[in-house]
Length: 373
Image (cartoon, rainbow, N blue to C red; front, side, top):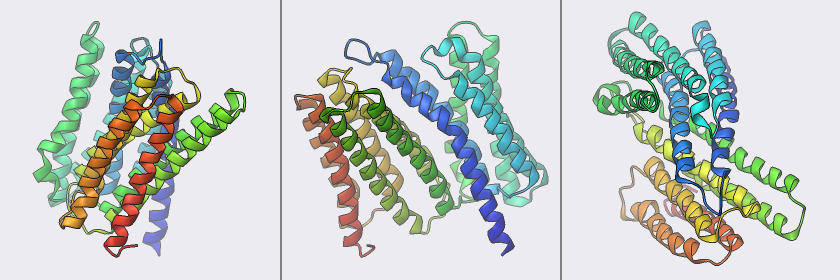
């Protein structure tokens, strides 16, 4: 009973922690809604990526620590609240004019990473045998990455961005290089999927917020009602596909480093940000039909590929491979043709929702075929 109560406390605190990221995620997705002359400038897409990656990695770093070593003690609770404060600093500094707010963004990111390093260092100092060796590896790896990123304050012009992202890149790559070390202490797979599922709900909530804002900002007409319905159907289809797949994957016994789940969700979360911007442009027709089609297909494609990576990594039988890889690949090809050929924004928007509905149905059919539903 005591263990169950402690777990509930950690779960509620984790949810509180996730909710602090809502503002940062919302603002980051909003970066893509700055269109000019019917197109999104390449620099905007680059900024979206450069902002999203450290935001995802900052959240992921502490989430994976809690998954392996977390316990509901005072030090961990304080660390949660310290990181929340740094997340607020990051969120306040997210802007299309990234250069002007760079210093605050960097301080927020490095603060989160150093507080995570401190938690790993505690395990290194006080832990035993295997957990201690893994904590030592991650402490040193993440400390080097954070210090490289922090060194960017000493550099001029674009060199500061190079240093910041060099540190982030090293931070992300070193666990991949050290995978053989990390598998000695596998992640708790169901808990990891639950944590990423909570953030997925937040991102789907961002889509709903875009729909609500679209209805509030525009005169209510048949066009805006249709746009809202299409966006809602799309959010429901993504929810259905994601959580049907996640529930099934969580039931499988897996003892590994969880890196397919961890890194695959980077692209999945980026895709959901893109799809939220698609919903925005479904109300505000600021993109040309062709550019809207490319944006829609990019979001769908990135989601489909990342979902295959995260949820269908263990497909072995022929039927499993058909539903896990071949049908999504075929749907991706069909989507490319349809979304880039339709004549109006509304038609592309509706077709994208249809692609997600078909994808959700494929999962349902696939699971029923395996006797799991």
